[in-house]
Length: 393
Image (tube, rainbow, N blue to C red; front, side, top):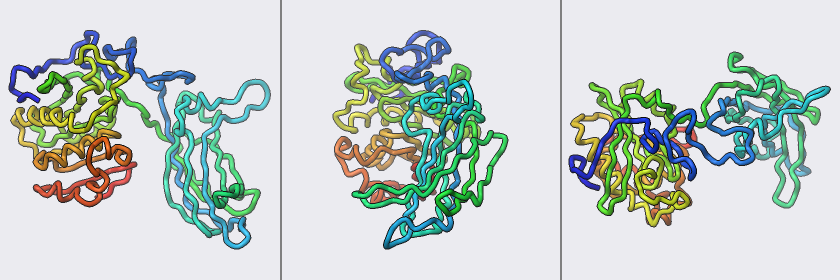
């Protein structure tokens, strides 16, 4: 990657021309600008709506415990696990129930959750929370939450049903709704709580959100181009570098906003072949956007981004990185090759590590578990690895 002060690197303000920086799409047939008329899309064949048009809501399930569950096994106590699912309420009289397609928009797995089995215990305790999503355009009165209690058997035996319950979906204004001492027909009681919140499942920046943002186009030695979208404010001393997964882009704007409100400058890197960078490659074939010969090919994209950040002259006391999905192994691979990146904290959101070790050409899992602190030994105040919403420090 050329130096950030070189003539090969360009910077431009956001415009509203077709193909400009506001293109947030990841699909083949829409490489244009973000707008209501020409917005980013993902495949929604068979779905009720384009997922970008859905105002999602989330139901948080806090499973506390169960008591006096019947013993379903001959020689041991119950191995209970819980399944929850949002469904359309069965209508009485004319009219159809809300379909599965409408509830989840045919996005697999977002309308249900499962709590793992507690072995050999008739009074199991979980005290765990999980989330289910549904289309907020559907009235909560037309939906129910089906809760099933099962006894887990061996691989050669069918699991036994202990009982099931049907609960209403609370409104966001209700706060936590406690459901204690829920008796089941098959015996035993269940203790849980429910809460509904308005929560964006996909949050793409709009034109209004991106007012004042700039883009730096980074050009590599062989002509490959990357895009660095950034928003800075005079006086800020902290920065966040955001790295998406492959075939992704800067779609986690709801993550960036609270950092901005806390005085962070934001830099969002779309490395070569990804998101905004697609429009920079002539003859780019989107079918191969996730193809990689190895994660080393992205190293100069990171080098160029860091060179540009340094060239701004701001002495950041905090240099936090945030990576999502396959952006995690790509980021970790870079950190393994560059021990002086200056990064002070790392956040990994749903890191896709296990199946990408061969692609990266190194043992990423072992690196994270055994060598991560060694890699960051050049002077950090603290390091946070966040996965699935829980922090491990």
